[in-house]
Amino acid sequence: MKKLAGKTAIITGAAQGMGEATARLFAAEGANVVLADVKDTEGQAVAASIGANAVFHHLDVSSDAGWAALVASALERFGAIDILVNNAGLVHFTAIENFNPNDATRLLGVNLVGPMLGAKHVVGPMRTRGKGVIINISSVDGLRGCNGLSLYTASKWAVRGLTKSLAYELGASGIRVCSVHPGAVDTPMGNHRQQTGDELNANYRRVPLRRIGQPEEIAQASLFLASDAASYMTGAELAVDGGWSAGYYQPALPGCPPDVLQ
Image (cartoon, rainbow, N blue to C red; front, side, top):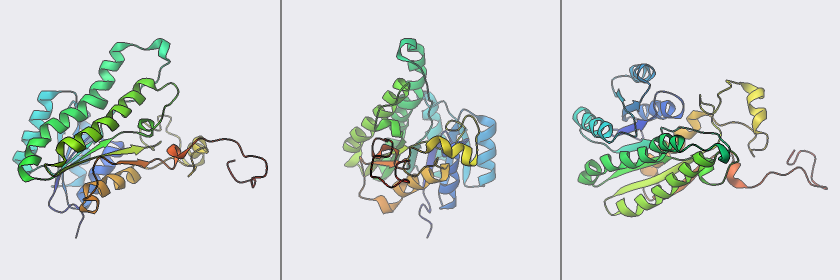
């Protein structure tokens, strides 16, 4: 039996990258999928290529009214909402001396307010049925700090905290809430130089697995959490980062084999 047979999932940021991979995988595992994004042309194309069990809906995740309309549309079309994957996100590089509060308003609106609004609007339908799963896509930078990414990192730590708080708040209603923490992933956001092969993986020699991740690998983690195989998991954080968060890299030490930590 397919792992998500008969279930309905909303996936934000689904027009490309990890969101697209997640929508395709969930649909292949039997779910009805609602793809939400601000990129209408790309999102509609992805939904059409998936088939009849997929539909695209324009959504600015920072819009309360937008979420209300999306959830109403999903319920009218599919009758229930079983899974929400809060995947939409923005990244922002800057030195702290150049911090602009306007950047914070925009980024936090997507990376933090978006998941909070998503949870706000799906909780009612999920509570009515006594079950549901919310998956928040955080980042490896929600597990550590990162030079030049203070705003982004703060937002992803906030998503991690939000996940744990919601797990407590919603557990009695049968709703599970977990976070996924991807490392570098070969998506338009994670590979903006559009490098390939050895050239791309050379940038990640300090990651224990020594390569960039693929969107499908993150999607598989979300599939596990969304499925009944994770039925006793809530408030959990799942690092899918090639080991990046496992520790601090340093050059090979005297006495180490030459291929260790090189």
